[in-house]
Length: 304
Image (cartoon, rainbow, N blue to C red):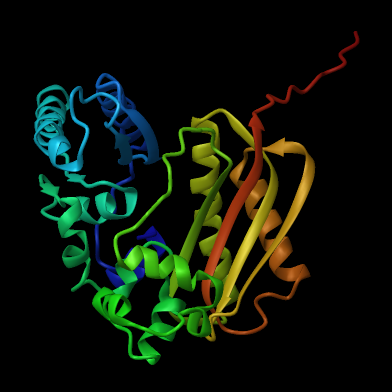
């Protein structure tokens, strides 16, 4: 939750500055522990990753044969993280990313959940449609309006989902049956950095929007500097009460890292495109076109 939202919901709260450098340090150490397993790794965020262990479990050729060594490896990973970093970890074991992610949400903060291939349909059945990868608030509302509220409803639906939600329909049907063919993506290069704020109620308060953009710019700038990156493009994202979503961007020749510069360009885009002339539900700021940061030097020509 963004600090702006937390401060509004809890005005008497005591806010402690985050130690992002420490969090990233711990993340790197934990990723090193995962790398020791020899598994293929897709890092999703500072505290989440997928592991494909099918290539490091000798003698296992079927899903049933993979279960015992997978559980053993998961327990070893959890024990190692606790011993070396004094942190707990929650692991979900399944045959694909969709089910593994949902399994990892069980029994936090120190859980281990296995979903065998034969049980995946039943595992999904009672869940809300919102739990499925790719289903956001708008899609959930459309499905609910059609009488589809749970994944079980999706599984039982005999009509053409494309008539309800368009081209995503066939993929959503596959997901509802626990089928996910997405491979792990091992390219760890950062392509963009962004931050979003969903307001508790729609707002037309431009000062509030500027304060939000300023906080977001500071967050983005800190991450750029931490990773020694500069951005060539700034983008703002606006969502209105009817869920209409607009994005606008501007690019510069020189890479930028400073919060004030990112903030000013965000405000410029809002004003130029008149995006804040109606109540806003969500406001986002992001940067892309990332590359190595360039340190600018000021040359002084001194003469006696």
